[in-house]
Every structure is written in structure tokens, then in C-alpha cells.
Image: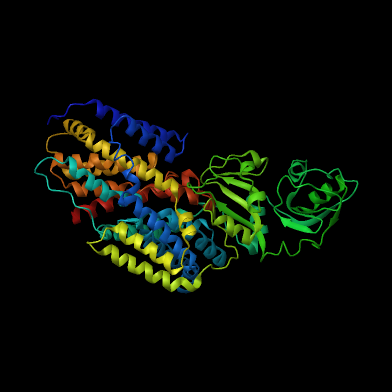
Length: 613
């Protein structure tokens, strides 16, 4: 077979952009959403996409659906639905570990197709922490199975993952470049992949139910953390040990006039958690707060260390908490862990720049990065996605800071459910939204946004809370890369690559063999450049390959979208990056447990697609 297409200048440009994007994603020197914006602007400057269509990705059904699912998920979270779920899981499990793990992963997997996977993982991390604290099981026994179930369960509907959300738009845009005589590609309905998704979720549940004990044994020495056992946990995990003491500054102390930040740099200084100056007492005082005669420091550390520090600096040591007894009450304040998600605004900033104590009222005690625990000179540390932050704060301050979504609190800490009286209203709205989405007369994006309006009008969410729940990084990444998919298709680049591939394949190559190659290639791309980038690049190519071998273009495109969601082994998947720190998983553990599951995912998915299509 010979291709009749000639490589044009536009094809060279668009293929060059694809290579540039993949290289930039691989080296991770620039954030993915910034790279996507650069690609978008280059598409406009080179006229590969017409100026009047360049920003149409922002108004596409895919992007609107993503925004809507984020807001709907936030609405359910505000009602305390998952707190109820944790209690229900514990009652149903009757203390049996395997039953508890099976129920938790199954419910998480069934929830994942109704909202974005990272949002589901963020909601389930406190649930996992609560289950861990109540059962005494390590947190690592829960997080990876839950993450895998969320990833595999996202294929139950067309709105569970970004690749599936984008697929219909890519199918519709491909119609403009189909050869004459080829049937128009129709968008897939809301629950089109449901049978495949059920098989994939069942595969995940079986995998961890029968092999979980062996696979997760020794995966981490993490035993979870709750306010009730912070001291023993943090002493073991981070070397943060000792009790809380009060140190009163005398007139002879060299600390008089120094800032809190300067005191922290002194040799042998314990953790400085509170400061009372005059009549004002506060936890997590800012680094520029000054220390004067009569100031009282609330410090944490081994008694010997605190005693030496107080003697060396002429401080009066009190073993009883007279000034800070209320502040350090475990029901009001304590130590917690929080993971930095890929969408956080903290990424790329130093700890000093964040000014957590001054702006949030939170003290940062240590950072857990992969296998390293960092607690020396952390103010100069630059934050990365997946970092585990060890925090000390008042619980109400922690809840306010967590609402900004810049970190996800893993520790189960005391907090009030914000709108539990709206639980039934939110569930009814959500159910009606799904019923609307099932209608073939109403686009999914309109159905989902109708649910958003319902939650706003009913008071489940305020409009500001809805705005805050949106991950603009995901929105810009998707909206900016969608035109690249159009350009790959409209310039003929996808057809040229498909034709070149067919020239090097034996005559009569079976369509199923190409499906396997496409699935493996997309899965590898998803690990390197993420699920959105891999789907954008591979869907036009898969459609053209299907046409070349007489296969079903819709089936080939669906294989790409599902394969793009198979990444369970690398932090390029936001869900995986969120559990690395809390679960204590290293790269080797993720690959050892994840690779067999990914291969099983691809086999089950290919069989399911071929049976249905």
C-alpha cells in the first residue's frame, strides 16, 4: 500500500508542534498548562487554526462538561456526603479488612465516573484517613487501591475522565475531514462505555481483593495519622517528637528584639509553634513577629533539647501550659499532613514566599518528598506536586486554607460539616442531572450545567465557592490543546502518519493488531505527556488508521480515550501524584503494583470494545 499524500508545510509545522509539546511535557521544565498555551499561540501565529476558531476550545462541550463536574463534586462535598459514607463503610465491613477494602474501592470506583478523577481522589483521601485511624490499618493499604478504582471506574460514563469528555468533540471535528462516502461519526451517549467500565472496575477489585495482601505488604511503613496519635506517629515518621512547653523571655535573654524567623535559625532551637506578646496569643505566628521581654514561646521538642535551649538563652521554662493550654487542646489544634496536588498554586514557589504562618495561620514543620523527609532550612525549599506538608495549626484555620484547594489534607481532623441539611437536596439535584444527561436530545454539557445551576439556586453552593472549585489549570490545558487535535486532523498530518504506518505494515494486517499497537502507544504517551495530550495526538491518527484497514473509526477512537486513562504507575496522572506522599509509595512500588494492572486494563478494554463495536 502506498500513501497518496504529500508532506506539506502545514503538516510539518503541526507535527513539529506535536514533537515540541511532547518534549516539553517530558522534561517538565515548564508547567503543562503554560506549554499548552504556548502551543495554542503558535497554532494561531502560524495560521494552522483560523483566528476565529483558535479559542473555541474554551467554549467546547468538553471544557464546559469538565467545569460542571468539578462544581457538582464540590456541591456533594459541602453536604458531608463522604463523612456519612465512611461510617457506612465501617458498619458494613464488620471489622473485616478485605471486606472494608473491597467496599471502599468499589464505592470510590462507582463515584468516579460522575466527576473528575482528581476531585474524587481529593474527596476520598480524608475518608481513607478516617478508615485507617479507626481500624489501625496503614494508610497505604487504602490509597493505591482507591486510586486505581477511581482511575478504572472513570470509564463508566463519558464524563468520568478528560479523554472521554474530549472524545465526542474530537469525533465531531473529524467528520469535516473524512473521505467521501464514509459514514459520519456520531457522538457517543452518556453511558456508552458502561459495560467496558464495569469490566475494568471489576478487574481492579478482583486484582486487589485476591493479590492485595501480598502486593501491598511492605509498600509503606506509613500507619496513618489522626489528632489522637500525632505524637507517636510524627516521632516515628518525621523525627518530630517531644512535648509542648512554654518559655518565657527574660530581660537578660539574647532573643529580645529578634524576629521569630531569626530564632528558628539558632542552633538547637526547638519547633516554635506559638507566641504570646502582651495579651495576644496565637498559633503559627509570622516569621517577622518580634520577641520582647515577657513574651511567651510555645515550643515543641524533647525535654532535654528544650531545657538546653532555655538555659542557653535565659528563658524561663514551664512544663505546664498556662498560657497556651486552650490553643494546644487536640480538639482545637494539632499536627496534620497535606499533599500538594498538581493544580496547586504553591508549585514553583518557595516556602518563604508562601508565608503560610502570616497569611494562613499555619506552621510548616517538615516536608516529605518521595523517600526524603526535609525539615532543615525548609523556608528555601521550592514546592513540587506530590509534596507532603506536615502542618501545625488551629483546625478552623486549616479548614479555611484547605478550601483554596492548594493542598489536600490527608489527616482526619475535627471539622464541622458545612451544609449537612442540604444533603438530600444535593443528591436529588445530582440524580436529576444524570437523568437529563441520559437524554439524547440534550447535550451532556447542558445537562451537567443545569445541575450546577440547581445547586447554586438551592444554596448547596455559593457562586464564589463554585468558582473556587474549578481547576483552571485543567481547563486551560484542555482548552488550549483541543485546537492542536483539530490541526493534526485538518492539515492531513494524521492521515499522512497513518498512511506512512500502513506502508511499513504487511499487507492484510488485522485491525485488532493495530488496536493493540494503538492502545499500548497511547498508554505510553499518557505516562509521558498525560492523558489529555496523548488523546489529542492519538485520536486523529487512530481514526485514519481505522479507515485505512477497514476498521471502525469510533471503536479505534474509544480505544485511545480509554487507553489514555490507564496510567496507574506514574505521577503524570494527577490521581497518582496525590497519593505518593500520603501513602509513602515510591516509584518502584507504583510500577511493581501498577504495571500488571495496566496490562490487565488494556486486555479487558480491548476485548470489551471489540465485543461492543
